[in-house]
Length: 531
Image 1: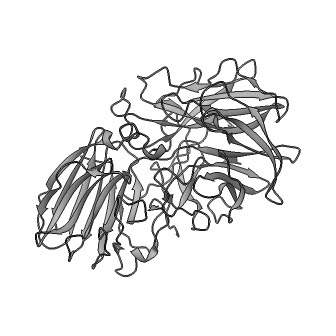
Image 2: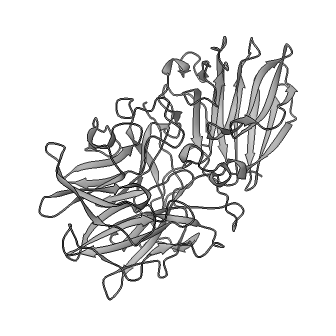
Image 3: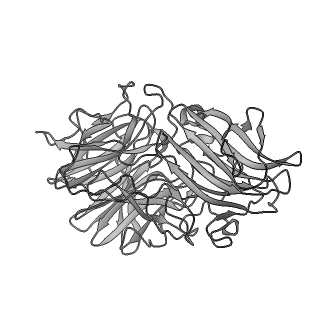
């Protein structure tokens, strides 16, 4: 997939130092952040699970304002995802730079396991995969100043440990046996390891407690990368598990970066809605916090091991990227960078050239509830309060055919508003699918001829679905649905996992048969100005 524009998280341009910043710095479903610095440039990567392309690369000059510059995994040979379950696929990545080469290492839990890719430019292109092993997850690389490269990852399941081997980057081969270098402090799932050499000491930082409300960051140090590692007596250095009323929860999976303004840390967290509840729906997001080393040489995160929504900004010149327009008119021959497919797309289902100025979806027999690849193009919901809308030209010939706008959490949990044919009349439907079943009678409204504007308005607790015909000025509200029913907590860990956040998407399907007519989307708009 080619890309033509970046995804950005701020507007305007200034070289003045900011006094404060707002967390999260990368909002929406951007979990498991890893960060590296090259000169005045900072780069992060994030896990993507069943979505394609995989592992977005974000770029910043000031740690606060970020733009997307590419993806690490852009081909099926790099990212085989066919028929993987929801929240399977790509797990936590790590990005590092060494001698002018960028390394991104991660796990495809449905492929051959752990691998890395390389690039001279983090925007890409990235190399084909170098497979390493097929056990554990969350791999990381540490480049020591004596030339040795260490491969570090989780091993052994919920009660496992952090293991380490030597990597020969010239051959891409692992050398020597896996050695247990630290068991953590006793929390389950000691994972997401990162090693650093600071003032002659080797620091090993991990997450423990599982990526939910017991999540925490712990750290240990040693005189040798092989240990033994001494645990920080004040562990955990970051957690909100004893502060359930804080508006940010589930903090963990952190990575350190050294800057001209000292050490900083990126981590994941969630914003439950309403605050104080235990329901989050737009995903695990990326947060930023300062780190200082105390008199005993241990890192202290933000003074007290917690983070806030508004914090003192880094003493770095602001670099605020131009904002993308709210509306994508599909005027290019390639999709913009914010768009994702489900699993590996069948490109015969998509076209930006058959009808110039439109995104054409040729609906296949696959629908949104299948563990497969429907004709679907989606983008993350990155704001609690927002609206997504699209103008659709679609004239179904059979009652199995539909096309429209979806709010998707996973295959078994989604809401959609769509154009279809029912009782011989063209109508708009509104449907709620939870636990893999339609939970209420599907609502229908006559829509008449011509293009139809479909809209979903998001507030902290609800989604509202409406439509408007091209011949009318009045919107028809078809229904509302709860955001919490698309939350990780309400869904539970069906099939073992639920790690993603909500997407807004356009789709078309014949529900078991191929559509006889294409669905043409004239534009898609994502708006945070709801007044």
